[in-house]
Amino acid sequence: MTQTTLKVQGMSCGHCVKAVEGALKEIGAQGTVNLEAGTVDVSFDDNKLSLDQLKEAIEEQGYDVIV
Image (cartoon, rainbow, N blue to C red; front, side, top):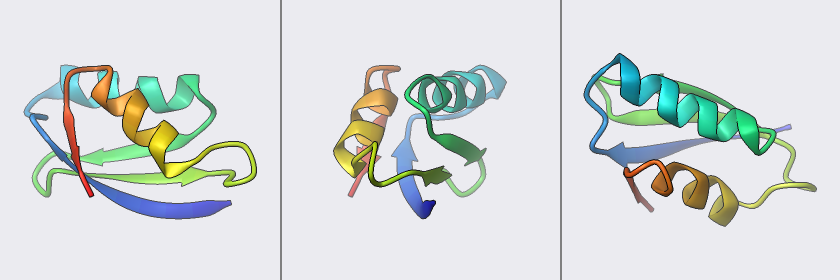
């Protein structure tokens, strides 16, 4: 498993947490949102998923991922 932390703009509430964590779970990654820091800690199998796929899943929920 690979772990990374992504900076995400636009998250502000519990709904945001569920949307981002749910989107990551759908593609096979485990995400934990830190609203105060504006980050998501992500664990994923880099043989199955790329950083671009993680970013795309979050951005499809309406948030901006800062790389």
